Length: 102
Image (tube, rainbow, N blue to C red; front, side, top):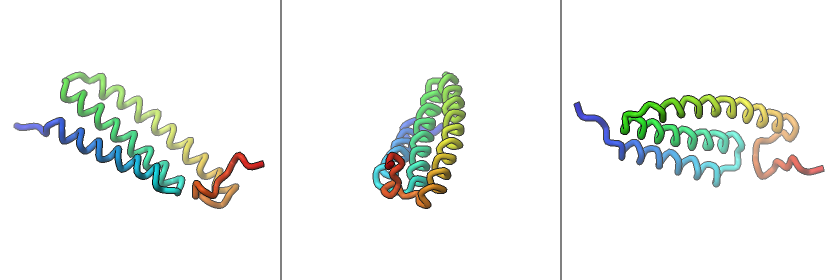
């Protein structure tokens, strides 16, 4: 049985990462920017799993487990911050939010 070459995984990961970077740089909605950051984290996880499988070493997959745990905690805290800002400013547009304003 033939397996999928590692290059395909790396190309998919690079494509996902570039979409995430584009979303962070272009979009102004805080929730979309947050989702783009999560997409970049998932593309890094895909790369780690691809190399782990290719080398036959499960340490990369264990590392992905810890990265996903931290990403879940980061998602909870990040969404809580976005909700708190929305309650105060009534917008999630990054250009209109200035939390350092006295």
